[in-house]
Length: 71
Image (cartoon, rainbow, N blue to C red; front, side, top):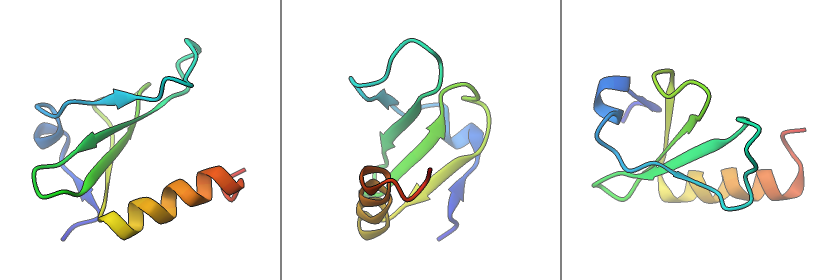
């Protein structure tokens, strides 16, 4: 499994932005993939790179966001 998906493949996904996101444009969007994985992208660049996470990797990503690991 590649850790990313091609932007053309991401075009048909249903992207969701957190309700905590403001209107400043600095948002991360998430989409559920048919196989249960999650795709993550930057809302400022919807045509840009898309990261792909399995369930354990996505949980670790969320935990890192919550605990401030990415500051």
